[in-house]
Length: 212
Image (cartoon, rainbow, N blue to C red):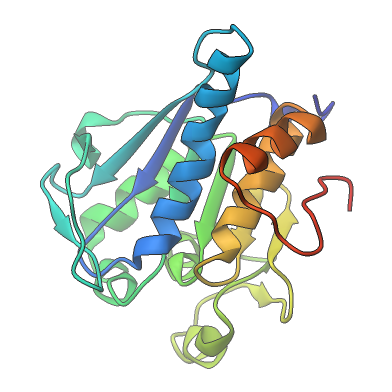
């Protein structure tokens, strides 16, 4: 386990979902995070985390490629999280114009130990003020738009994920899986993270390693 208190193992993890979210942006991390409990049970342990999908009003959402998904909770039902994860997709553009969403992300993020994003979810956490003076990753094709919107944050090219303080951001789509596995390695151990990756039959090249 990491000595960094930012990476103390979480209990409550929330993933914000919304219309026109990119499917793999949230389904990839969801699979990794839920696999924590699958591996724990395999080891004879109790579930370690609770992972919830949270939509603005608690209703179903339709993702950008047509997947319909139900939420576990509405934003109004969630007062605190250890980790908040904001995925990306075309839906982030209208999302950053919604005062209720931005207020909730800002409030929850300030209380959370970790604020994380995948792809253009970086737009949302930047608008909420979490990337000011920080390095961050996002989808390679979104760099110019991020800057054109006047969002604050130093974008880092050609990386899968970036950690700066208590903010961890990943590049596009599949990069959210790598980021989530790295977080599992920080919360528990690289060996446990490799068990999660093996449970998913996920075999990236180079193989996952939390110490690089």
